[in-house]
Image 1 (cartoon, rainbow, N blue to C red):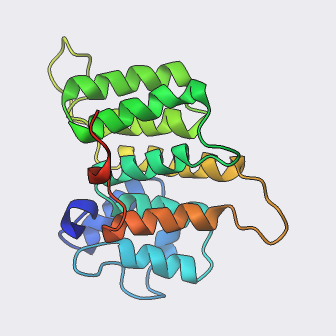
Image 2 (cartoon, one colour):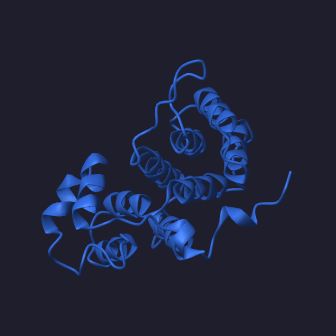
Image 3 (cartoon, rainbow, N blue to C red):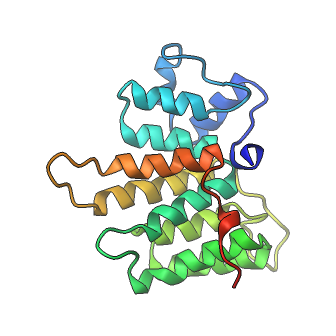
Length: 204
């Protein structure tokens, strides 16, 4: 399971390139502290190290999203979108998450296009809209269907998934002593570990 959930990098240079492309160049300044960036080719451990060192949670989420495969990043976004406080996701936003989950069940390109349409309908100011856009960006092509395929850059799905997590955090009420980010990051690390997977989605 783990191999299907975590992105594998050939070396630290490849991981650095991905993080820089994702707009995380600033966190690389302190890359020499707090452990190796890569463990067995994965960034997951470094994301945990950054969290434990008190690095900004938005940065931790960004690194963790790039530690996940594109499918796993989409699933993380779906999970946080469905976990809205006060009763779950709003009915108006549900089609976007359902479109992303449909792509996860069967990652065909037409489903990626459908997820993009759902993202446009719901809007990118919502975790659900970001989850759907992440599914589109995790597909095979971002070119219109009548044109030759154009593969998306590999960091894009993770970037948008991290945006979904950040939006979900802003929607959570901050009662005294409550950490809005903690449960959301915990889901991401559970996904990375293979303990939380879209493969458990019920068939429709």
